[in-house]
Image (cartoon, rainbow, N blue to C red; front, side):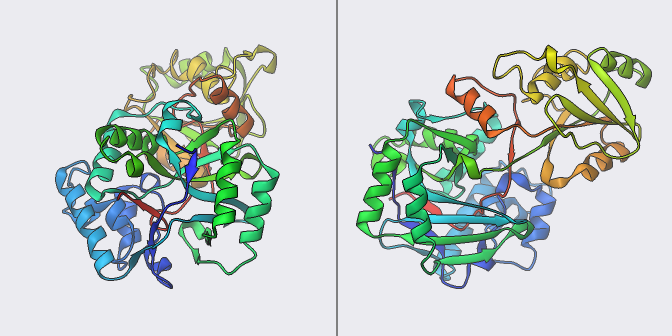
Length: 406
């Protein structure tokens, strides 16, 4: 099996992409999904978050949700809103946001390569979230959310993508957060073959975002061994590492684990400088953090001479977990502990303030973004980062390309 291969995409019909595309299912709440899909019957949120079409309070993991997702997908196909390509193709995929642009390749990636560690992960998955994606794939008989991958920049791949983007795009649409999504179809056999061969020379690919989707794809492939030619590949878009952009992924905690404010600050100060600030703190470098507590911002700075050499332990997310979240706040398993939540940097520091000032949370931490070099270093040694270590922007769109099983 080759590392990647082209696929016959299910995609919006010509001129209909703006009606369809939606943000990834896991970056919006149920209430946000309802609002975004309001008066948009063709929004892909009716498939990726089908609970919005059922009574408020419906369990998003109930069988009725997956049944409705399948009905909605079939309805959009029957209405001609979504069409199936006749021939397998690759797609050059460009994301443009706030002056930043990155161009990658959409393809299907081999499950076998993922299982063998050639497609590297850097996070563990949550069982409930992984089960959800398995049920979604089974219900739709398709993968509808692409996995975001990265690869070490390869000059000839960049040249082939640049040549494709000089042609007329297949789709060009503005999506969530003003992100521009532009796709060019690459169907001619010589270019398809060359791209396949070039990716085959790559030692490994890296999962940037989509650990639950890739893990679920592997499980479905294992369950459907009678159809490996179709289910043995999962939907993905790969971008060169030099074009990837990682935002901060911040933390909010519901309580101080029984400590008073004074005692909590005293414990925190043992690990470094704690400086009160009159404005929201956006860390400017590694080992520096912002902390918001009782309507007061602080700048917390760890001693850079006291940072481990281990590629996981030295990460800012690990230092926060190992020095504050676990020993002081009692959050030993951030994957399962309901007392902690994670806020993507795209939502800004104002969101951290709001969640603390509202009384929902007691303390918030802003972090310096993890770098791509750190991510790849961790993945290269087969290690795992703490959960929610990276927030990539811009996000891929759901609904623009789907991989239907034969």
